[in-house]
Image: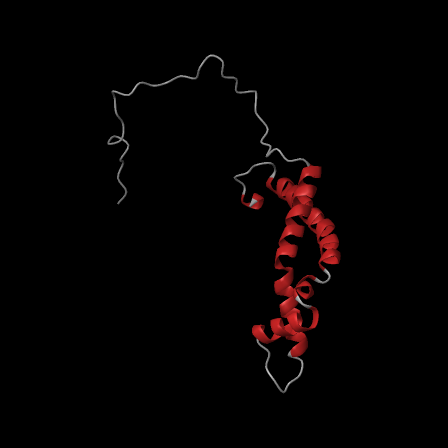
Length: 134
């Protein structure tokens, strides 16, 4: 059932191009994304800290909901948990403990990012088209 379609797609009026004189096949550029190990660690650290600090108030409300919801008599809503935090500690209650969390998230994400990139490069063999590099 298969037919040969090669004759339909050949145009005799096209000119074959040759490689330019300055082309050297033995010179191969090594692919590099421009980030070194220390830069990966800094990028991971900053990204982790920003992400955790931005989501810290949401985590605080979630934790308050879990603490208030441990009583089986009543259900807890986001509004009730937020009202409880604001009543007891004010607006700064949403951010209590953010420093300790930021200090822990920085090193953890620095290691995660750098090890991830190193493993990705090692498993893919340096080939960005390899499925192991994604």
